Every structure is written in structure tokens, then in C-alpha cells.
Amino acid sequence: MVKTKTNLPPLRLHIPEPKFRPGDEADFSDVVVPEIDEIARPDEGSAPAAIQNLAFGLIRVLDNNGNATGSWNPGLEPDQLRLMLSNMMLTRAFDDRMFRAQRQGKTSFYMKCTGEEATSVATAMALASDDMCFPSYRQQGILITRGYPLVKMMNQIYSNRADHLKGRQLPIMYSAPDHSFFSISGNLATQYPQAVGWAMASASRGDTRISACWCGEGSTAEGDFHSAMTFAAVYNTPVILQVVNNQWAISSFSGIAGGERTTFAARGLGYGIASLRVDGNDPLAVYAAMRWAADRARTNNGPTFIEYFTYRAEGHSTSDDPEAYRAAKEFEKWPLGDPVGRLKQHLIRIGEWSEEQHDAQAAELTDLVKKTQKEAEANGILGHGLHQPFESMFDDVFEHLPWHLKEQVEQVLEEQEAKFGPDWEPR
Image (cartoon, rainbow, N blue to C red; front, top):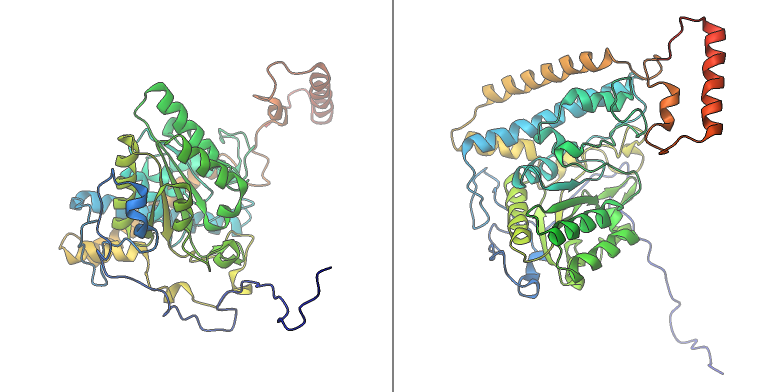
């Protein structure tokens, strides 16, 4: 019989708590921002074990004065930098307009990516246009960067009669296979094994296309995440696995997912995967890291796991009120700044941009989004009847529609005709 050791202190369970709550003043002075090139850029073919320090540092290119320096500097031309800035600004303008549309009751739901635009825009620019993207629900910047029509995105948000997904997806859960953009799922981390499986198939065919996937830091606690990491490592899969650490998973801060113990990038090390931790608010560092990982995958050097250290400026979604669980104005005090502002500062610094040009472009993009919104709303908005015919719910579901469902559809159509007259047409 084992005796109780009464001389030991009682065990205690640690419950992670965020440092700041409503009413507190945020202070991020403990966030370590290393010097640029504290960890120099290694060769893309480096063995994961030889570059483990990259999972604990912070890859940076832009300094506090807007200068691009260091071995990770991708050396982009001014036209590319202006395009990157424009794509981020358009994403932000789109977000602001669609957020307002939800508040006006024109759609049921929306999610903004304010403060995180670089993690979708810069990454998409670093990939080939036909590389397959498996996004989470805050990567609308990928579609915008790849030139996907804004009106099609809005039609999907409104679930109107022009929605090519026929109202079957929650607003903002786009699907655009013609732009190498996989269907977004509300189930967390499902895109991880899908991306790995797609990349395995590409390698099996001897293709040259790679895949990339995104998730939030909270999703790294999901089983699908770990299954995907195992397969990616075992089969040396040409895939880029990314986690956007924006500090919050809805109202749960990153510590609930293990962020207090170590970096999220460090999770890749246990699988033997090359892992990078990147300043997610530095668009040039994000581009450089993605380009490094893409080159690595394309040359059969295997997968890369990337953590983007960033901050979610606003609520999780239109259903969320961040003021209920975090300190006010936290984003304003985030030490890594705003990705749009930092790239703007850099372009001005090198003489390729100005405040006047920036203001003019912001106004132009806002007008573009407004005009597109009017075009989309002509196809219908929430509650105005201009939606998909109800019988379309069975399209693409069954190869052959079962007889009992056919009877139910016909019965409803007959009832509607009797109620509204023979000239009635379903809308």
C-alpha cells in the first residue's frame, strides 16, 4: 500500500489567462522583437535539424524606419511593392464595406482580416498562380490577389441568385477551383490533411505544382493538424503549412492552444519539418519566407511549417465583441505595427510613393468596392427573395434524385402555383 506523502504541496492545475482584460491597459513591452538578420537566411535545401533556431526567432526585413535590409530581403521591384500594397488596401476596403453590409442586415455574417492582410496577400504573390491554396476563413486576400472578381465574392456573401455556390456555403466561405482556391470549411483544420493529400497526389503524378494551407493558432490543437504534419513529414510532401498566430481564437487567447510554452513554429520541429517564425505584419518578410518555402518544396526538399506572428485587430467575426474579453485599443499598441502602414512607409522611404498617392489610391479602391457592391446587390440581398430556387438544394447532391424527393419537389411547386397563379416562377 502506497502511503500518502503529506509533506508535499498539493498539486495545482494551470489555467492560462490573457495578460490584459477589459479595463486594463495593454503593454507589449515583453514581446521580443529581434534585430534584423539575427538569424540569417539559410539555403532552401538546409536540413531541418540544422535550422531549428528559425522556429524561435523572428524573420524580419523592414526596420522601424521603413528600410528593407538583411539577408531575407526579397529585393522586390517598386511595381511589385505597389501591387502588394494595392492588394492589401483593396482587401481592407472590401472588408470594411462587407462588414457594414452585415450591420445593415444585407447578409448574415462576415469576418474581417484587418491587421493580417500580409499573411494572405504577400503569400499569394510569392506562390505560382496555379499552386493550390487551402485557406481558412480569413484569407480573402488570396482571391483578391489572384484577380478573382469581387462581385462573385459579394454574391456568395449575399447568397443571392447569382451566387455560384447556390447559397450552400456560409457567407465568406468561398470556393474557386478555377483560381486554385479550395473550398473553405467552417470545421477547423480540415484543410491541413486536404492540402497534404493534394500535394502527395501532385508529387505522385510528377507534377510541378505545390500546395499551401493556412489555419489559426487555435486550430493547431485539432487532431487534423497533427495528422497532416505526420503525413507531410513521412512522405516529404511538397506542401507549405502555415499558422496565422493572431493571438486570439475567438475569445480564447493563444495560451489556451499552448502559446505560453513555446512558439507555434516549434511544433514543426518534433515532426522533423523545417520551421520558420515570421513577423506577420512585415509584408516583405512574409513574402520572403513563403518564397523560401515554395522553392524548397519545388526542389523536393520537403515541407515547411511557418508561424506568422501577427495580431487580430478586430473581432473574430460580426458575431463577436472583442471588448468583452480584451483590453481596448490593443492593436494600436502591438509592437509590430500595421502591415499596410509599414509597406506604405517603406515605399515612401525609397521615393516610390507619397501620402497623396496613398490617399488617392484609397479613395479609388473604396469607390471600386462601392460600385461592385451595387452590382452584387442587384442580384439580391438577405431576406429580399432574390435567392436560389428552393429545389436547387438537391442539385449536385445525388447522381439520380430519389423518387420520394422528386415527389416532394413537385408537390411544393404545385402548391406554390395554386397560391400565386399559373404565371408564378420560382426565384
